[in-house]
Length: 189
View 1 (cartoon, rainbow, N blue to C red):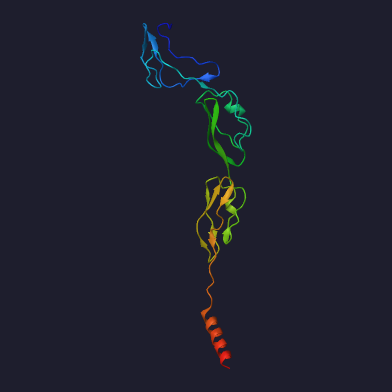
View 2: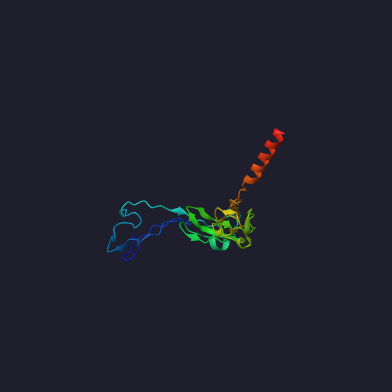
């Protein structure tokens, strides 16, 4: 029994949590007000209530590649709670870490491109060093080469390095005509 003025919030066992959405009903003079639970508008009489496992321990080292130790920021998370994804050195976070029913759902740490790309026909790509994942590096091709696109970094690797197309050298028509005339003259002699 709840005393008047008390909040009616079902309790889960230790290590489990419920979703904490909205206002919970309050006992007022023998009645719960409002007469429904917040998450799904279920009437308070004969209601079933769900508890979800918490994530009491932090993610195991190595679970998410290129992360720093997450023990300090991700220990003791309740179901639905989040913690930041802390990445090492040249990696950048794409997403967060969240506890969902006792398991971690997480993003990824994506690497920046720390090596200079090798683009045949490029004038200079030195400024591309350190481009973040998903970033592009604008560069120029040497004279007479045709540029197809800018460089793109994908998780520490440069995508498609054949971006400067070499020109085609057309055969000399004058040289071909002179060779044909010489061949005809020697054939007639």
